[in-house]
Length: 400
Image (cartoon, rainbow, N blue to C red):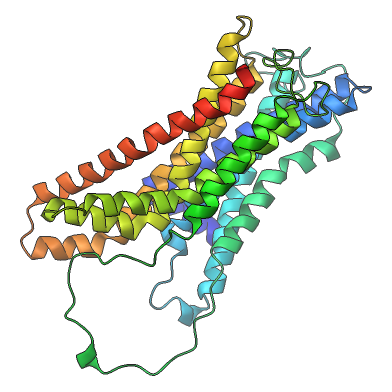
């Protein structure tokens, strides 16, 4: 009840983000239900049904990632003065965030079920009644237990991930504090945070391992138990299961290396006698590398996969993408991009105090805008060639 009241009193932008989580949950729920109806209409082809269900895990993971980012930036779940006195400490707030995420996911799953039943012809009285009755196996009874189990995947996974992400961390043990005279005078300019560059070597190693595994798998024979989605099936003669595993390693490597690459962009901006604009932009990137680097790496992984898939698709026989493949791709692209935008908004709110201090000291607003534009341009210049290179390397063994 408290989660519903907080949702009702939230700002329009917060409500929009929750509605986007519900919409993404609805899309994934519809894909899962379509997989169920395929299994109903093809009872002897259980292997292909399992493959379709396995491919649904990609948009499911993107939706959960987006839901966690929305829960992390929800103002109603942030610790504030006075909340602990009424029993809303950090643990209760993390539970509240998990409940709010579950509510959004459940709303989307309900919409998916209603839309699915409407297209199937089980619900009447609206336009397009039974428009997809043949494709959705309307002649077969729908197993309600199986449908509800599939629809609970997004709410349960999102709420559990949000609770684990926002759980209160144990504070470190206190140590003897040095004298105040040992501290330098505070500066309004952002100081670099703890280095996230430790993940950069592991990320590069995972990318190299993934590309190597993909190259090796592309030389294997066909007949893998994990074929590619329908539009690409029959064009690729290698081992799609190995290719998928290799690409997963490459995507994880990009996500792991993202903070380190972002920090490198900040150092690059501050090299060779930086002025105020470059110094401020570089320090900000170094400070925010842990917050925006990983979502940026995930977006690059998705963009590289899109480049590789477009290369593979252009070389195949000309045909249009199926509606379910298009829906899954749209969900992945939209959720990863929205996660990056939400993380950028979180970073902007986190440095609001520093920005206000700079303005009080007389910093021109134009300098702040130039620093923001310089940060965005530097990230674009560094990550765009990297994405194109990874996409080309991933597509090369597939098109050979």
